[in-house]
Image (cartoon, rainbow, N blue to C red; front, side, top):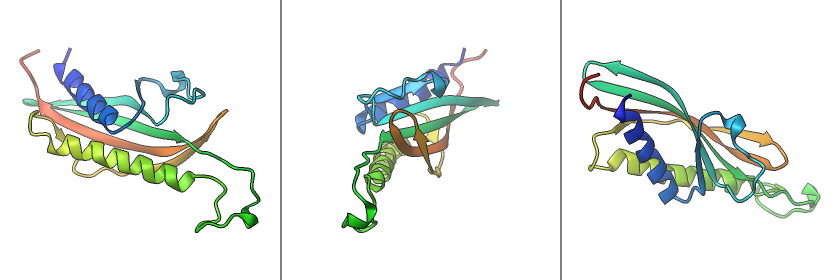
Length: 151
């Protein structure tokens, strides 16, 4: 088994937790209990594939970053804010984007490891209606590193 996956996983987890993600989970997102309120903000990581080429491997991950949306019961016509929103959804998107950007910057600038991270990442916004109302982003990130040893 490749040690690269473990190294890339550790890099992802450490940076995400350092930037305030309460929970980092792996695998099938349908197996995560998204109804628990204390787990947010959350980053769920799914391994998509690993490409081996000569002396490097590229590991692709799908990341889902989610947080709870607070919805108030006010009439939108009575709310006095810039967007006329009755929730904190803009704050959720801004906060998640900011946290992810700091973690991404850590991955890109960490000179103590040999992992190269995608130069650009697109955050695709999304929503989920469970018992909780969730908002967040999904993105794909590639990590390239030298293959340690021979198979």
